[in-house]
Length: 288
Image (cartoon, rainbow, N blue to C red; front, side, top):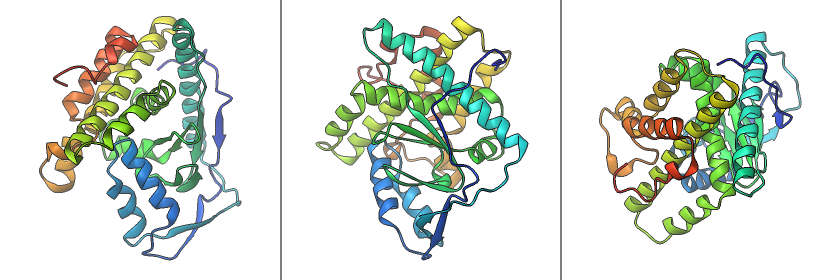
């Protein structure tokens, strides 16, 4: 991506190098983790990922460290890149909302190390990036980008930008009231049907990430050769089927909460190619 002429966002809250959280009490699950697991369920994330991370041989958060630790220059470069991606999403969604007669409320991006407090509980790096609707913030441990490259084999700056844009997509859903409607519907249906709604919510966030990329490139020419392939590779790498096969050797479609690799790629491409919110109505189509 070419952000040489881009600006950095004023909505970045940098908690890196604070040591994350002082932790203690191995094998216990803190109330903050439980709350975060419930929020994970709200947005279709498997809560066992949160609970297992906190409860199996892992410490429970007690209090936040105030000790500042030195950061490597490469990490500061990633932080600056993340800030520029956030700024670009602000410009894009601000214009889209204004065109629809609404005002876009900009979210904040919290950069942290290891673990940090949020209005949704204690966020941990093992969860990956997440959006907390209670405080309107996206939480990101920059170490996830290394995992994206090494574990998921999805390298490149646009793959990283896609991850941020997906979480911003959840913020857009929250502002539009879509997330609340999905949660209300989930409370009245079976677990299998609730999972299907979660998949549609996540695929819509993928599509919204594509909408951002469409407008960012159209107005500011930020995409370079290979960028789209990087994003599609990231979308494919974190499909439920790919992740389940890596973890247990087989996939269980009824348990999907984010969508298959093919579905995630498809809906990001839909947003990228069509560039409008109407194209991202994943709740009305019969087949995903």
